[in-house]
Image 1 (tube, rainbow, N blue to C red):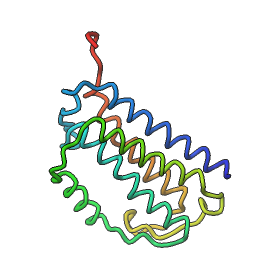
Image 2 (cartoon, one colour):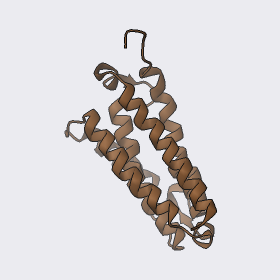
Image 3 (cartoon, rainbow, N blue to C red):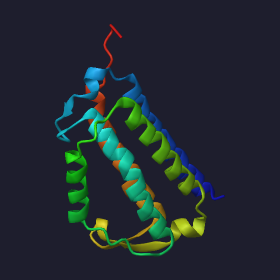
Image 4 (cartoon, one colour):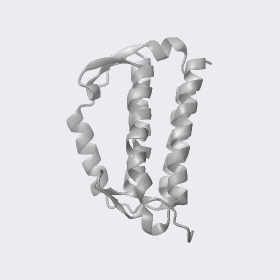
Length: 163
């Protein structure tokens, strides 16, 4: 097992755990707050992040194999719009399960990479066609995505003294 992969997997697991803790700590009312930066509820943003573990995880696997990722920004935007329009009701339990399950799969995938796989690069259309290594995809897409969205949720999930 690669030491670099272990460090990356630990960072991912910690970021996912922080997001899960935010959802666990939130009141039911806080979960429905609309996050202005996102235009979605707290639950929808967390659901979006959980789904991204599968999508970005596939990109990492492709990069580690030296395979181009053809997904375009327009396709990502369309997928996000479809997700937001999906009528499937979200619950705290369902989103926590997605974060737990998708997060565990992503963490295991990261832990399994060798240094050579982490250093393998591929063309990434989601990154405007730039070539990125698997390690860069983990850091700058998978991890960044969690760190981009989680701070937007924190102000809406602050526990008051009554809780």
